Length: 77
Image 1 (cartoon, rainbow, N blue to C red):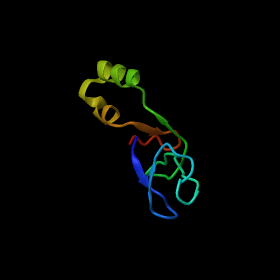
Image 2: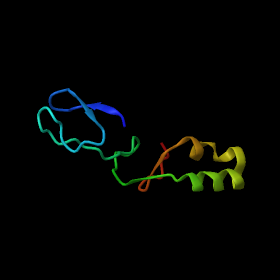
Image 3: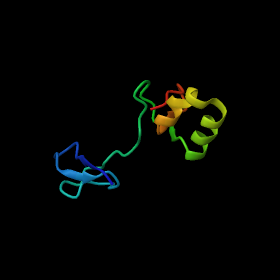
C-alpha cells in the first residue's frame, strides 16, 4: 500500500482509499498511460513475462521490467 497526496487538501492518503479521510475528496486510482494519457491499461501478468523470456530471451527485457501495457498505443510502462 502506497501513500499518495490528496489532490484537494494535500494530506497523505492510501492509494487504495476511495475518498480522502480529511476532506472527503474522491481519489482517482486509475492508471493512465504516460505516452497517450489513456486509462485503457492492463497489468502484465507474471506468466506472460516468463513466456516472453522463454521465447525471446533478452529481447523481452522491456516487457519484463514493465508492469502495465496500454491497450490503445501498446506502450509498456
